[in-house]
Structures are given as C-alpha cells and as structure tokens.
Length: 324
Image 1 (cartoon, rainbow, N blue to C red):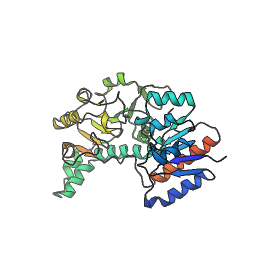
Image 2 (cartoon, rainbow, N blue to C red):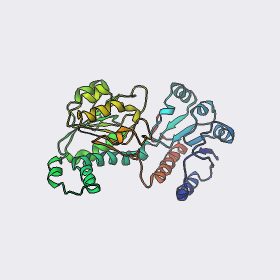
Image 3 (cartoon, helix red, strand yellow):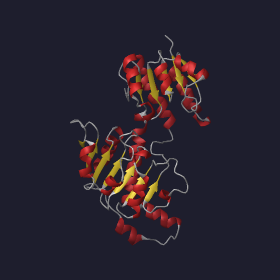
C-alpha cells in the first residue's frame, strides 16, 4: 500500500544528492515536499499534512492534533520544545500517534564539540590563537605554565542523555571522574547519576560543568547567579543545550568577577547573539555560533536516520529516538 509522506526538510542547492536519496528511500510511497518555512498550518501544505500518514521535518503542532490520519512524525531536530505540550501528548496517546526526533544525528558532533572545547581550553589554544592574531610575541612560558591535563579531572554533566553518554565514552581514556545529572537516574547508566536537586552539592566538586539541558519551563535560567556562584573559581562552564538555560547576566557577572575560570558557549540567550552583546568581548568567554550539532554530512545523516526509522515503521517495530 502506498503511503503519503509529508516533508519540509531544508534542501539547499548543494543537497541534490541527499534530496534524491530521500526520494529513493520513500520508494513507492508518495513524498510531498514543501519549503522549510512552510509548517503545514494553512493552504495546500495543511491539506497535504492532514492527508498524510507520516511527516518528516517540523510540522505545525496544532495541525498534528487536528489530523486523524497521521501516525508517525519525525522531527528533523534533536530539540522538541515546541512539541512538548500536554495536549499534544494526550492526543498522541489517545490516537496512537508516535513522535520521534533526530537526536541520534547530533550525538556524535555535539559530543566531539564539547571534547574539543575541553581539550582546547586545557592546552590553552585560545591564548595561542590570540597571540598569533595580534602580537606574535611567542608566549611559550606563559602558555605552558597555564596548560592543564584532563587526566583525572572531575566532570559534572547536566542533561545526561545520549550526548552526555557519548561524551563520557570519549572521556574514558582520560580517566576522569564523571557524574551525570538527570531526572530519572538508572542503575544501568554508564556513570554515576544523580537528580537535579542533589547536583548543587557537586558544583564545588567539579572542574568542568557541562550544560546539555533542553529548553523547558523547569530549565529556564537554570544556571543562575546562585548555581554559578557554587562553582569553583578555577572551574569551566560549557553550554551546548539551549541558551535559555543560562542566565546571561549572571554568567557575565561571574566571568567579570573571575568567580569562574572560563565559559564555552555554543548557545546563547538571546540567539543569535547581537554583535554588541558584552558576551562577545568578555575575557575568557569563548563562543561558537550554535554549530555543535553540525557536520558536513548533516543532511545525509538526517535522511539516513529517517530511512532507518521508516524501515522499522513499515515492519511495525519500535522506532529510534521516540519521544512519545
């Protein structure tokens, strides 16, 4: 039986091969492609979405509730804040719909990005880059004296999900002490895990505090003045989850007063960060523009992830990265 598959995944001109692969993956089924700016909330795109059994991309959540034909929706992103609604969950439970995201696509690049930040800081790469781009004064002794080893250091990971677990695997050769923070610790977790209410006591313990928290009302400004104030002055803060989980003013204050050693941010609040925002020029604040999840083959990985889940769906097997 031929199925209708609705999709608004972004395909640029350079993604012709990936677009062709998606057409091949769909095979005998009918693929209805729309631009990424079209979420299916009106017009032809809405009619198509309501007539489809599968959606891939970022469809309008209200239309998902309205639909009686949709059975499976795969988001192109790892984040699903817009869909984390009780009315949506209730509708999906009652109608048998399934929501999956593309978390698996971004696990490896995000974990490698954090590792790069940690190693770059430990080996003082920002200092060397700054010297090369300005004075070129060969700061050998100063940089050597500030260089550190990751070996044996302590890491506290907030939002210990698939990215945190992969990062823990990457850090294993450094023999670091790692504790994960998650809502539901499990005995099967690869490292010790604790609930968020018990994590405050560990902030003073950690050399590295890593924030991979998703956006939600409970995580808004999670790292505020109080929590940042519990960190050691030689500890480093990393944020790659969502910018809203960090209170920017409190982070600026902590850096200005040297109450933490450095901050590495891939996400900010606001985002994009305005050119005149003080975080850009604050000493020891290092920013990447939300690139942690990126890779040259990102589009290919997204399509392949959908392919793998489509095969499971057609075989009536559990899907990868199911949210609810």
